[in-house]
Each structure stands twice: as structure tokens, then as C-alpha cells.
Image 1 (cartoon, rainbow, N blue to C red):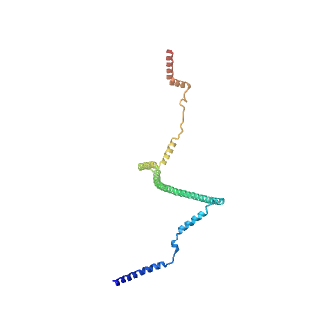
Image 2: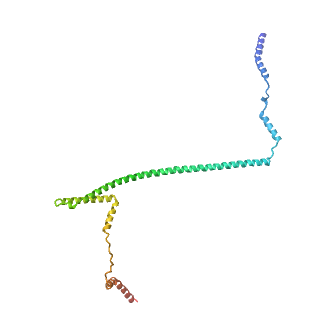
Image 3: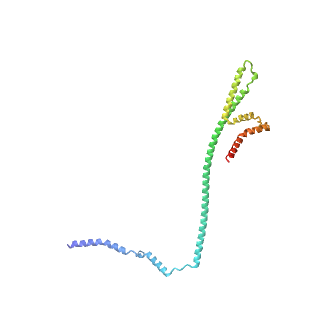
Length: 245
């Protein structure tokens, strides 16, 4: 029993030797005092001591004047900056207005010009068509005039005068049809007819007085014939008034 107890003590001592070595090593490390100092607490204590030691004093007039000067300088700078911003704002608004004017003017003029070009093109086509029709009408009238002018009665003979007369009447009738058709197409030709009518009715008209050739006695009889019903009526009224008095 004794040998077993000695072995157990030896094992326990061997197990405790490393722990003892670690404890001794930790105890042998150098001491660091910063690990146990609260820097924030020291700073608060120092500030409290300084403030309690040196109480705040009121500002001097020089300091107040200096602060006023600084504030005025800042106000001047702020006012200058405000004026600069206002000028910049005005310039931007003017630029925006001009851009709007440019955009609206461009849209308006493009709309007007496009519509105007379209209308003029349509008018040009209509005018060309009208000119073509007028050219055809002029050619037809010239041809009809040549046919009418080519009628020569002096060249007719006893054998062909009946045929030539029929041809001449046919040419005149065709010319009349061409003329009437041209008048329907071109109202300006009606002026020719109007001028011809004015020339045919241009004889002076003499206005004679109604009773210019009557004598004084004849005029008296005419006046009595026109006024006797009124005279008889007036006489009847006078008699009726006289009897009813």
C-alpha cells in the first residue's frame, strides 16, 4: 500500500509543475500602468478644473465690433452673391424665353410655309390646266374665225352657190357654237357682248315734254277734265254743311 501512495504523489507533482511554471512566467512580465488609467476621466477632470479655475468673461467692445464687421462683410458677400444669382436667373429666363420664341416661331413658320407651298402648288396646277383650256379655246376660236373669214360670196357660181351657201351657214353655226361654249368657260368674253349691245343702243334719246305742244286753252280744258271730280265733291260737301246748319 505504501508504494502505491508514493506513485500517486509523484504523478500529482508532475502534473502541477507546468501550471506553476505558467504562473511564474505571467508574474514575471513587466508592469504596464496604461492598462489601469482612464484617459477620458482624466480629460474630464482636467477640463472641469480649468473651467472652474478660469470663469468665462463677457466680450469686449473691440471683439463685438470685430464680429459686427465680419457679419457685415458676410452680408455684403451674400448680397453680392444674391445679385449675381439674380442676374444669372434673369439671363437664364431670357434664354428660355428666346428658345421658346424660336421653337414656336419655327413651328409656326414651318406650318404656314408648308401650307402655303401646298396651296400655291394646287393653284399652279389649276392655272396650268386653265391655261391649257384657254389655249384650246383660243385655237378653236381662231379656227372658227378663219372658216368664217374664208367665206367669199364673190367666188360663188351659179352651179355651186347653193352648196357654198350651205357650207357658209354651217361654218357660221359652228362658229356660233364655239363662241357660246367659250363664253360659258370664260366669263370675260361676256364683256364683248355687252360692248356690242351698248354700241347698238348708243343712239341719243330725245326727251320731249308731255304738254309742250299744247296751247293755253287746251291746257285749261285738260286741267278741268282732270279736276272736275274733286270740284263736284267739294261742292256737295259745302251744300251738306249749309243744309245741316
